[in-house]
Image (cartoon, rainbow, N blue to C red; front, side):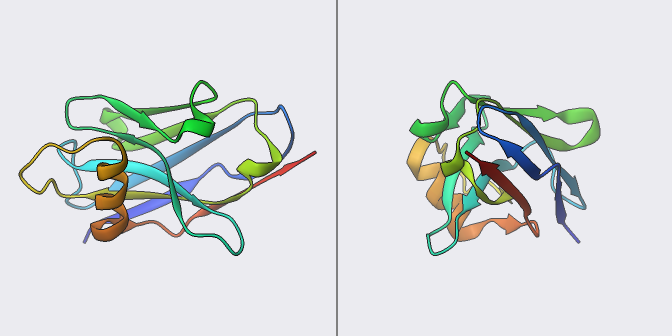
Length: 130
């Protein structure tokens, strides 16, 4: 059975950094689409960063140049390095993985596909204070 487990959340002041990790187990492998989402109280879940099958990295515009997504293939882990954190980055962060549909996806289409068809972890809380 496939499973995703996030870790690394916490509380930091604005300008600080956190490193999130998502550990995959089961049948999820390097050929899956995988990405990070977040959800603030009262708001919809939104895509933050994802990796296409060709290695292209997609970012939500507000996190570009502050967050970095990467894979640790040996450990089957997905990492999100978050720097220069802002109070508006506060929320529960989730990773999601989905089997490719047979066509290449990227950008907002990939985020929507992961949102609709992804396997989800339980989330990890990130709180940024001003």
